[in-house]
Amino acid sequence: MVRIPAFEVEQWMDKYETTPGVLNISETCASSITLEQLVQFNSQKDAAPLFDLSARMTYGTILGSEELRQNIADTYRDQDEPEAASPVSPEDVIVTQGAISANYLALYSLVGPGDHVVCVFPTYQQLYSVPESLGAEVSLWKLRAEDSYVPDVSQLKTLIKSNTKMLIINNPNNPTGATIPLPVLSQIVSVAKAHDLILFSDEVYRPLFHSSPAPPSVLSLYPKSLATSSLSKAWALAGIRVGWVATRDGALRARLASARDYTTISVSQVDDGVARYALSAPVRPSLLARNVGLARANLELLARFVADHARTCDWVRPTAGTTALVRFRHRESGRPVDDVAFCEDVLRRTRVMLVPASKCFGNGTEFRGCVRVGYVSETEVLREALESLGAYVADNLA
Ligand SMILES: Cc1ncc(COP(=O)(O)O)c(C=O)c1O
Image 1: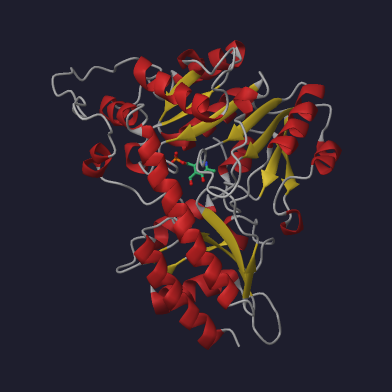
Image 2: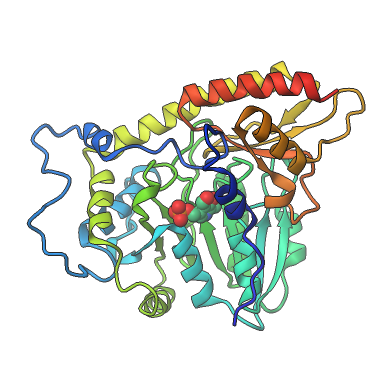
């Protein structure tokens, strides 16, 4: 039996997000849309309906429909490689139930006892707890606020061992909202190449680059790389549970596909249909523009909050994705708040939901005083939540 620690952020969300009247600014998805809204994003006037009601509900194509995998491949072409000689192709893509299944599949298929893995920290806990539970040794590559949470490659070099097999990054990062820019990605690729490592990048917040140039996916930089993503965050469709893992390396892909046979068969054909509609050429640009626009507008509100409460909080302004780490401290002493007690009390008294970073991203010891804010909610929800949080902070952080 696999022994695995509690997945802190998922348990926190599950425990509190159904609090009656909650003002949820802890969510990591761009504010989710309805299917009625989705069809409004279609620029093609005589578009086919969202569902073909005459389609038989077979398992469908096992790895994901050809059209969905083509549309996923096209998302890479939009940003990375409009003129690349060998673009990501539909054959490189394996469809899964969300990025969480894609991550699990990649880790379960490729690492085990005797392997050493290096993983950025903080990040989504799955990325380091699962390899550990599979018997791999994991070293955490710590990101620092003073580096704007961009990984320091000189530190990476000190972590590599003779049995290092995989290097895991998360770009853009949850919870910091930092982007790894191309020059740093290129240095990471050089280290991976020099040691023949698998470079695994969780890119679930791609392509939500609202305040930084979009760096390429690792798929465009290094053949022995894997990228995971989904419809949940940048595309505002978490409820359809469609994600993917892509790699140009045929041997890696064969191992993923073979392990996946034991857990998935195929994803829901209804979900596959919605996903291929959402990522189709007439829908994709306007859907993404809505989410990037929402992120930009809301980030301004959050930036104003941080500036207005500079005596009690500070941050590294995020450059992409949907989340930010904000550190709160007591006004007089400068002492960081107990972020777990702070989040619980804020929720109880104001209904504003935040995520305590030391518990959910810092193994209980790091990122004390920090909370994760998911700011790409509906703008009115964020506005109301920040107003209540501001009043709470003024009254309670003496
Ligand atoms: C970095 C990261 N990877 C993966 C996931 C899982 O996302 P999905 O809804 O696609 O399963 C999340 C969700 O918060 C995440 O933050």
